[in-house]
Image 1 (tube, helix red, strand yellow):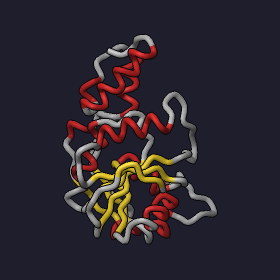
Image 2 (cartoon, helix red, strand yellow):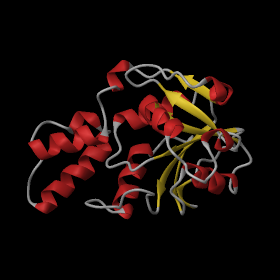
Image 3 (cartoon, one colour):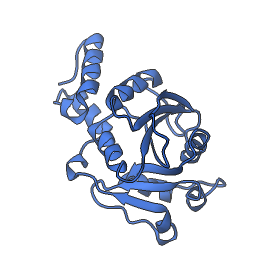
Image 4 (spheres, one colour):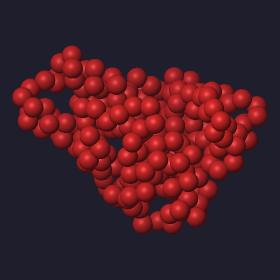
Length: 204
């Protein structure tokens, strides 16, 4: 795990927020801010390679730059690039750098996918949740975990105004020439606008 931003605190509880961050949005930051009511630090993680997709239009280095701009100034946020892409691999890498209780931070929709995913011959979700817990933010409704993992899941409330904010919606608006700037932090919007200008137009 390679760090680009490292918080100064020594956390007893750490939330790991992995994602593609293409691009970072206000919803990502809202989730991280809400998590700070439960944990001491939030670690944003970009995998060096995704398990089921590739870096396409925006490469890893540019996403690191955008994410660094998004979290800049918050002393309880860190940013790292992981070598593994699976959640259990990311948690394992984080445990090499932190002596902390680990939480995987995600939204309700992502939690449902994580819990129902077919992990094949690899460790199932219950076994994985012995190594970390889920910290699930309400997005378009609260998450109701299955009974067998309920003791390993914590919920946090998110402003309902965040429900419709996503990276995919931001990209859609950019491609459609609609206003997108209010879905992402101003410092990220400035970097994206500069990228659009370099590429010769587009965006709203």
